[in-house]
Image (cartoon, rainbow, N blue to C red; front, side, top):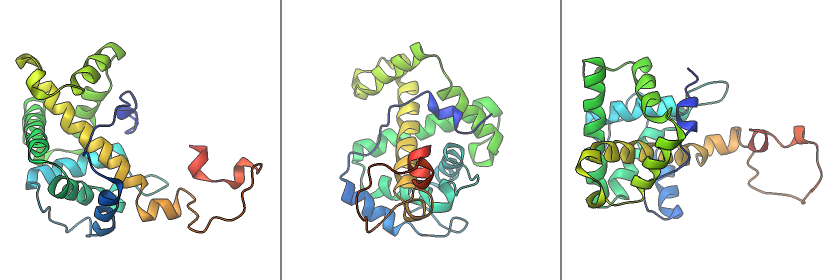
Length: 207
């Protein structure tokens, strides 16, 4: 399975209600080494799970993946410094349900999960029919108190996964390394040229 295929069917991005300057400040401080960092707010299991989810969403390829630009560290800081107490509780409940689903599916803890197992579970939640997508979108526009008790687990799991997804994308595409080395960012733009060969523009416009 193409790791990126799992998230293409859901286009809604839900996440922290924060201003861009706040998130950019968090991005600039998320520079800990990916192999040694310790989460400030997330549990060890949540750190493990989010690290794998982030890698499934944007893996290393011919360009750096999300782990290479410290996206898990960024998500940890968004949770700690941006989310309200209510949003943190949504995150915690969704993470617990997701880990329970992992254990029920693979018969061991998520903290010992493999890359292939996380890919399989992500596919379960994101590779779904359009009719089911519509139901999930409608649910995510509601508050938890408005959700039927039979659907609260699904609601919270998707709330958690979509938070991770949206902040993975934000953290990745606004990181300095990706902006400088992949997206053809020009910090000092020159003269406007309205007609240039597509080959001269770069990755920012050809994906």
